[in-house]
Figure (cartoon, rainbow, N blue to C red):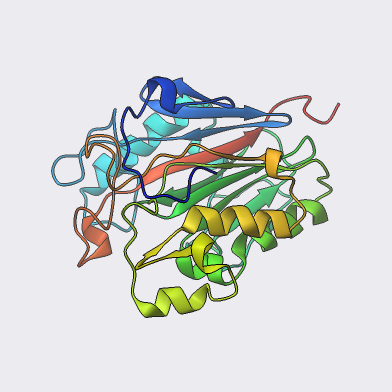
Length: 273
């Protein structure tokens, strides 16, 4: 999961992408037994300032037709139409829902911060702007989790693993996409108190919090082997602004003034053979 020592992003691509991560155009792909994930940057969209370019956040103050076009572009890149996306209304909680039926356009958004599914030809999707997008992949199921500090404090990843196992998954692997790093995540005492159960030098470093270490520890506590936890180790805040939306870096007073990047995971046909 990377070093606990604060270190700013250098070369975002190139040697920064270690297997199972790979460059997919301007974005980051990951392929593990049973499924694929794609972590999007902000490149390749049509939104204007301050949301340029690929903003997929429906609850932002961006021009809605631009957001809809951006979402169509994401759908084309993952090869799964928007009507086959599994999305929830993200509330920085810990609920992870299991979806066993294809989505309907008449479905009302469900409040949850993760979706697990055994379905093929659908994509579990979350949107983030510093929080951790975590893909859980196994031959029998996949899940995508939105993990901010509140969700991590409430064990959202543990609950994501439990949902995967309830869906029949056994050999689960996790991929942590671009998100704010310990280098930039300066926090107050309320956040530190939320992670008091974790070792100070691991989750809490001076006045910074190491959410990726919390994620790794939570996955380990859920019986995911360390070599099954993969972190792309890129910070959304100190990476070049042209690459990622970052609520902390850009427009911290109003979340609706910051764009969101998409992260998607889907099953690979024949993954459970």
